[in-house]
Image (cartoon, rainbow, N blue to C red; front, top):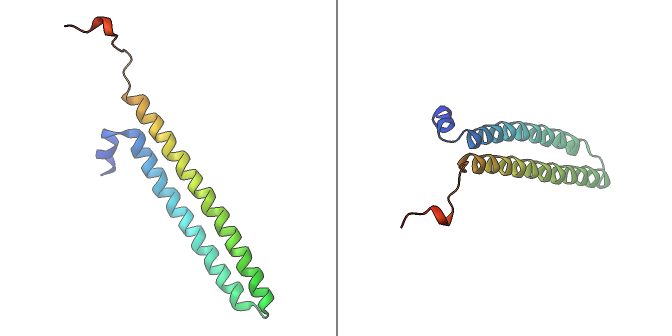
Length: 100
């Protein structure tokens, strides 16, 4: 399937593959951090410790999801620009050369 997509639009295919790879890495990292947070929550002995663990978890998660969304946006912007460049022709027609 990737070969068929590559033949149609290499820039978008490259972006799609990059996004899928990036998503897999991001989700694996987040899952690992979720598990570590669960361990930390289970080790809490006071409500204050629990609040600190949860606050740190949410702060980190928000930062990471924001950074990831920005990376996806940059990837799509780059792919769109590449696609547009590929769609343009090197010559353009003026109004004077249109046959009537």
